[in-house]
Image (cartoon, rainbow, N blue to C red):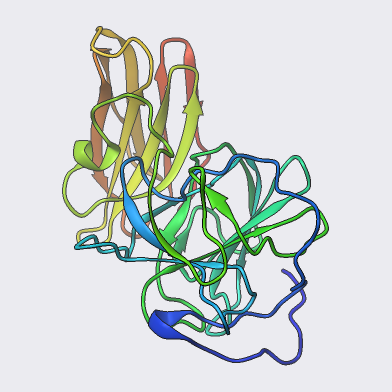
Length: 290
């Protein structure tokens, strides 16, 4: 867990723009070299708000509703690859939040999450597009939104962050459409599993990705493996789900786009999940308990 300052500069501009403890506030002269995508699912459009003056740290983005699209519980993806570290500041500041440390030394932060792919104190290797959490309103927030930062290799804020090739400078508000996680597959994990399911984890495969989703309304988990190659051609693909202490359920065969959905109730249980595309496979440990 990061060490928090004794005093936070407190709270809040329009629509939950929370003030956050600042490790480094000055604009750094180094430039973020990575190409960042939007932190949302392919095709999703949300407003990126770079509040000024008063948003702390200056240059951070609040992602909020665009048109009729509700951002609450929206899937959050890594905007670039690296190692993700998971934290929980409780009812203050960032709330549930994640820092992804990238290979070039830069960092991105994702705050006020309703859920995270790992428990606080954990870490995981991520690729661009890996699901790391879901939008919420934890910590010092008054409405669901995603607080997002890009930091340089020295830890200073980039006050004009760029995602999807769109630069959002201080004082600007721009709509940004995500290409993150776009594989060319016409189906999404949410469509395969059905209404009410939210992605909570994923694992990359050669030729596709296997996803774990959860429905908070009924306590069901869902696993689906989406192909990204040989689309429309029947090739070997599988998905499985195994609540701890119960039998594994698997869907496997030659499919054009995806395997699954495999749906089982596991509201108070750990689950093992995974899938395969051709000879590339993934099997998780028992995790996501309760």
